[in-house]
Image (cartoon, rainbow, N blue to C red):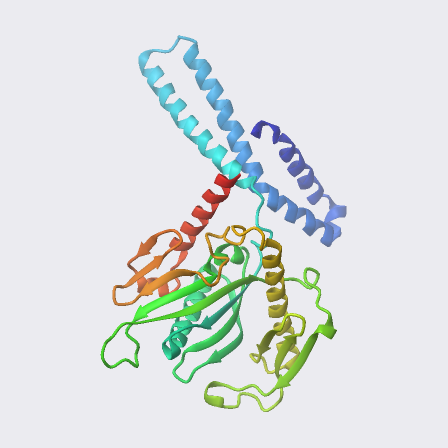
Amino acid sequence: MFDKLDFLIDKYDGLAAKASDPDVIANQPEWRKIVKEMGELEPVVKEYEAYKKNKGALAETEQALDTGRLDEDEKELFKEELSELKGKIAAGEEELKFLLLPQDPNDDKNVILEIRAGTGGEEASLFGGDLLRMYMRYAERRGYKTELIDLNATELGGVKEAILMIRGKGAYSRLKYESGVHRVQRVPETETSGRIHTSAATVAVLPEVEDVEIEIDPNDVRVDVFRSSGNGGQSVNTTDSAVRLTHIPTGLVVSCQDEKSQIKNKDKAFKVLRARLYDLALQEQNKEMADTRRGMVGSGDRSERIRTYNFPQGRMSDHRIGMTLYKLPAFMDGDIDEVIDGLITNDRAERMKAE
């Protein structure tokens, strides 16, 4: 199977030659397209070259052992090398199998992350605020840029609904597993008897979609403008700069009041609307394939409880992969890579098993 992949190296070398051609460099759109294609091929090419090198070394080692000219110490050394090379080749085969799987075309995209308070009243809103801070801290740790598109806050500092843009290479590839219901167990600040309450918030992670991917008919969208307001109804802006979009065919409603400029708010609202319409299209496309949207370790079903945050025990449990960590303060401070890595590994194993 892998021995037929030499054409990939030839293709990569051909692209590299084009990328260094002065005429191509002068044509920046063409040059960027070539460099992007090289970037997509590079992981497979490098892994395949390493695989071939190890296969060659294995053949040489086996040949040396077959000559019968080695003393006992040399034989032991060559046998150790043989075992090591076989391990590298087996690992290389697994990596190549994964790299040759169809990749999610959205993985490199920016993310539109939406948080909504669920059951639990004010405590659910407070937890929604905690999740918003957690993802903003995580983005900071990864070097991603964040931009708050819309925020519906409560007087106690909770979040009924928030829409956050996260920009960075590979942001969607890591955050897409966060979609679903997040449950919290803790004693609310407003609870005087010390009883533990259970609340929930829903997270939706959508890839940012370009205009060319989702075309919206302006006649299908009703645009309303209104005055921005802050916590408790305090005026943030004395002009009608906030924008509400209603997509008539689907009934989707998007509001944005983060900017003082109506034009900027409208632009951001359309970004969110495009992402939601794209997500609807994906769900429609996959509705006859129940496990397709669960391809992200079950995260496609937003009614599904994916994680529990137990504050009295300092515990976080991800129910999809059975992982429990007793470092909740660090986790809530954005240190969530250990769980995301586990979800990615599980997803990878499931997809390879399905091939």
